[in-house]
Image (cartoon, rainbow, N blue to C red):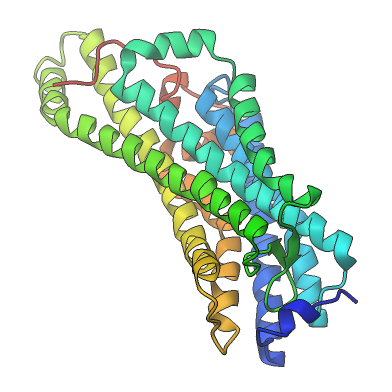
Length: 345
């Protein structure tokens, strides 16, 4: 049995009913996460979608990461919750904590890359062509994974560590350790893996929304031109009108996915920050377990957001299962359109 003495000295454990509820929740999350992310991967790989796009490859990176969590860290926690203690030794705790933290950090890094990419495409179209022509997805993924591993490998080599969480059925960074070295590492994680990303999301999407607000009159004018002059083919007007609407839809899907991720993980980040700056501990385990369990729901919320808010994804699903095998229109993807004109009124 894994030694949880250090944790249990300062924190209460769950009741039998609490462990049973946690087990059921983790099983449901694991199953839904497995099928949802497998389906997203299938659609991205098999549908006649413009898979050359950087945006879609970044979505694939998130789906693969969430799938790994659903088949590794979640089952380990679910089985341990059923047994009411951690079943897989110190090494297993380190592996589970490393996988969960690595995949979580990979997700938020990828969301940041998507936000920056959407910002360039929409707000800085003069750099869009250069980006697509000279930037390889391999370089972007390399930056994402270098940043990810920079923070997740450190605890394995002794600066901080992966340890059981308060209820003893899942593992994470040692947020409860206030020693100087561990506290320094935890502060670096909070700043480098959460705060900076929130700033990136706020900057990119606020500028995107501001840019879109300036195109309202342009959209109305283009729509009027297309309707009133329907007998005349105005290809440039139609393409520009379609481009603006498509960019809005793709950005809405991206914003929905990152919002779902932040909603899932922000309570956990806040409670961890609280542990770092305060020595006070609640008498109940629920203030610890609720943010932790809610954070794990991100592996379901991410593909769900993609399905609900991405019209191109839904069209790809229809195309994939269509008996007629209708061709997918590359323009619907919204990631490979060449800039006809800046998105300004």
